[in-house]
Image 1 (cartoon, rainbow, N blue to C red):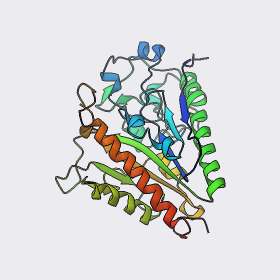
Image 2: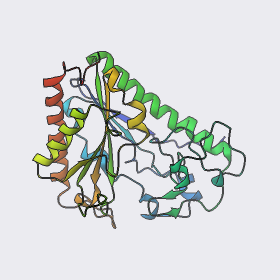
Image 3: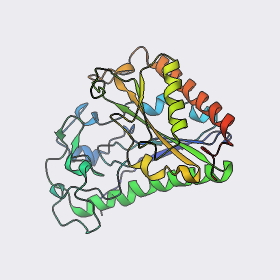
Image 4: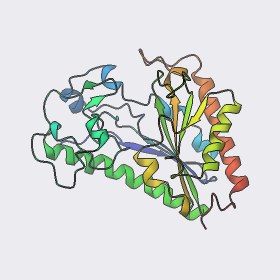
Length: 293
């Protein structure tokens, strides 16, 4: 069996009282790198960290103070990516045959960013040798499945308690992202899988809150949401999932990974966003667009 990291893989930062029908999730901000993983990697230092959603857990840290649980990954995205199907695996990475249920043909696998990534964000290969198939499957059993089990429990608890729920999946994006056909650099992108993972009114409200604070915010382009948003968003059942992407360049130096002087201001703006979203949902919770039929 592959040795599984001994550190706490993830944590649930619970509120004193679960007072609002929200669950916040930060699946890519993990920065605890298992020594055996570093030993396997061709990359060291900052290079291996290029896929992190840097400090996103800190940007959304006030979620629990506002009355919502915050699920935070401690394991790094480069080690395993929970925002993928459980078995999006690249056969070129492994020294044996993958099981027949593995999805080896997805676009994400082709790009090197499957459940067990082949590259970090800047197209740098992570591994110097192939992994055993068993090691890949062990990671999924030990990391991916417990993480999603915890997320499912939080969403189900919210749904039972309030009759509906809103999952906010929290991410960051590179500072050089531009909107196709324009030279606009968005500060925030709200993804709702083109209206399928959350009510359009909810995502429009999210965009509007950021715009009113003076940020450039758009919907779905170029990030509409990943596996988590798509998998857990069921608006017809009163379960809404939004992905939020924060432009890294507004809060962190992307070369040194040091926080910018404006970090606290960006975190305060995000706290205001979370509060205003909670107020909006409280006001319109009985609307059929949000609540389950």
